[in-house]
Image 1 (tube, one colour):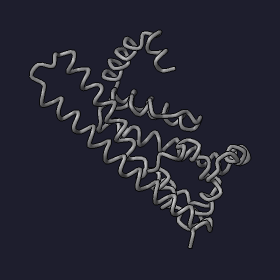
Image 2: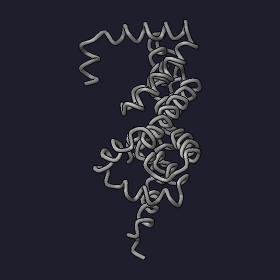
Image 3: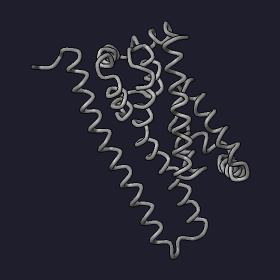
Image 4: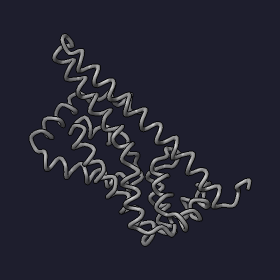
Length: 221
């Protein structure tokens, strides 16, 4: 669908217009972006493209900050909705989530750790998980803090991809002659970020699986 949109619609012109508007109205752009990310999280819309866009529009430092605020705001709202306003709806959605029972049991004992590990692991759907945790016994403050810490590696990775894309585009528009060191730094930084994020996710997934198995009594011991 993304490829079709890029081919059929004037995406380049839209990106150019959006970039100029963002540069001219930075504060308003920040507020609009945070609001859009919060709404997307509540509506269970995948935020990967939004995260990459933040790197392209705002650069790495600001983009990471904006995505952190927007994702945490949306995750907190979804958690509270699942816990107090739409509990029956959330329960119905969790029926097809095979690991929810194990997750529910595990959070009764180690809420902060379980939330942190699920945020670091790519095996759990981020947006749906927000509502799932609202049904568990995890404390809201533990949920917020663990979510914020656990989302940072993935946020840095995707924002870095967006920022690198913009930098490469700018280098291409200026001509690549004499820009070898900048290209090398871009590629090296992106690869290092990807490797680090992958290692963290693999460790988190393995540890989380052990924790869930232990809490549900399926441990071979």
